[in-house]
Length: 245
Image (cartoon, rainbow, N blue to C red; front, side, top):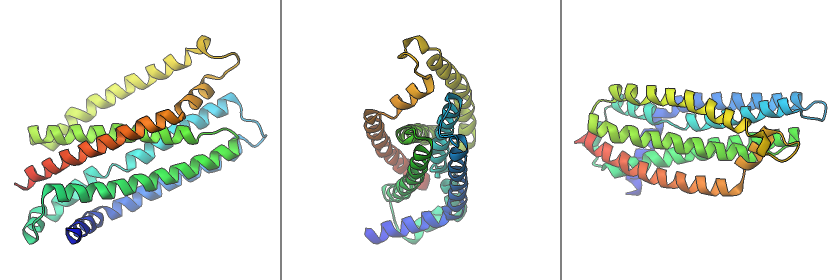
């Protein structure tokens, strides 16, 4: 069983390693750019409210990019199809559970690596800006991972019903994009307009950054992510069994 798991991991990693290198380089360049911008914004030893807001949204974007680049499902599925999974299935027998376990082991390692890079970047920026962005970066990263894993579960579940992934992309991505465009600005506007409820002389972005980075949010989001990964692996195993049948 261990040999089979190693073989499946090696096969899946070989299929996506080129795209994975490009994703890692892209993320590294963006995080490096953030680290280079931070000392320029805090060159005078004082970070204004506008600079703080810009750095906060930069951290959120970096967390989204890191989480988004962990989503190797589309690349892995397409590469698996092009490589001919049915011939591989004939070469040595394996179940959808075995394949899903190998796929999610690779995915989890990628999550930890990209999360580690984001954490290091947030520590550097926090030291340079004299304001802690670490909690914000980690919690936003976990939140975006939850949303992406949920979308993966919905995609695979619906794919087993619709049997048409190209049509499914249009069904899911277009409404989701419209919802995101409408929901995010309205949420931010509501948070920023809530100034009367804030303590005196408190910047809304500072208040938001401190509360997003709370430890209880980290623990709650991590537990939710673990649950979604478990469900996602089960759904992926079912989808692989259906595909191979």
